[in-house]
Image (cartoon, rainbow, N blue to C red; front, side, top):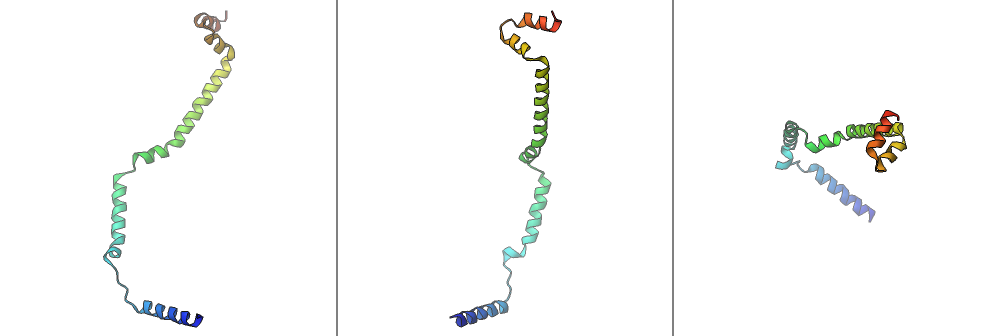
Length: 101
């Protein structure tokens, strides 16, 4: 069985080597069409969603900075100002807090 299958494979390979290479119409202008398409996409520019995706690191840095600044600011004032603002005596408590009375 091995001998006959090997002979058949050798015959098939020999026929494939002997056959002429024919280029179909699709294969003939493939490189030209591909380069034209790439050139056209390059002229159009980048889409908006690509710019949005590229700006994600910038926005994340801005959010981290703002959250850090808010955390620093609230830690300086302490929790007593927050309690004073939520107790119902906002105006008098703020005046006494800022004036030091």
